[in-house]
Image (cartoon, rainbow, N blue to C red):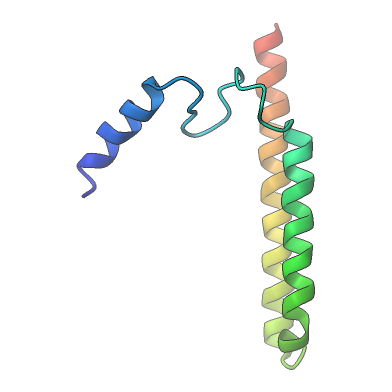
Length: 92
């Protein structure tokens, strides 16, 4: 199965509008990076709200829930930051 993955990745990269490992930059139908990060952050917050009643029964679950949400949001911020750095380098 894993032997097929590089071939599949190369095939998908040859197709117009398909970006593997990031945004190709030429697809205007995709939301801007800041908008995507905001949507993802809101979805994480909504998942925390839904899970809170069950997790609040145990301090360990609360820590895991809040830690998972925080690291997820931090990861999205890092992705946005890397996009901004890449954009600046490409603009030069």
